Length: 359
Image (tube, rainbow, N blue to C red; front, side, top):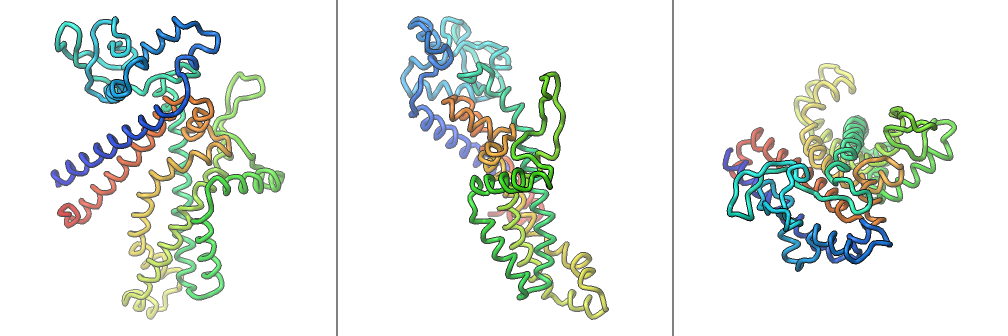
């Protein structure tokens, strides 16, 4: 099992290295002048040159790539003299410590991955992400809980009524749910439930978890604002869970122990809840574990439409302003979450079924 965990960990590192490389190549090929964005249009050539030197943008592309990898690596090489601005180790900037010197000019540091600074707000990207990520995680969690609970209930219900009109109706619904683009579904849900039926639902078209009052002196929590984005984000996994739960329930309901339970005079509800539910949950749990990480990425457009101040909205706003460090940092964090969750799921499979660790 130890070797299995190490193999999965190394696989995750290789995936993240590929993601980091791809992100660097994509965003460094896009137009934009970071120095001018940080200083404004009235900046002088000397200031622009100083910013480019500080960011390492005056170096060839391959050196910029190595600097980017160095910033992200927890163990990195840095200059001990501030004459080399792009690699000088500042403990406050990098949130770490210099371990030892290699020579008179360079040393090895242990630090947190450095995601650099926003071009527009000058804030640390890690600070921006630390504020926005919890709201995205909350949105994904609520969406997944909604999809799981409602999906299992519907899947079990229509499995007990196989071939009826209600079974066919929900099968058609799941097809549309999986095929509908998230951006389009978000617009329809926001317009329908937040505007047309807003006076009856009491829901807003846009809004985040915390709302600042009219005087700007404080904020209040608005839990109702999570309903529409969570519902929209959960439509696709809900469709998947319904179909998986239906198929799993149908398989379990055909077993001998179910027929025995029915022969004892148990009601259809008792058979589903007390006997079929536990045995039908395995494929659902598998789907849920895989979908949660995907919801973090899928939240990008949902948050933008509903004005939910999470990581997705930060990424879209940064793209509009060509604020590439924020975009790169956000994509890296979502990718890392996806890789970690998938590795944990694989490890759990290995614990539950030792045969998996042999693959």
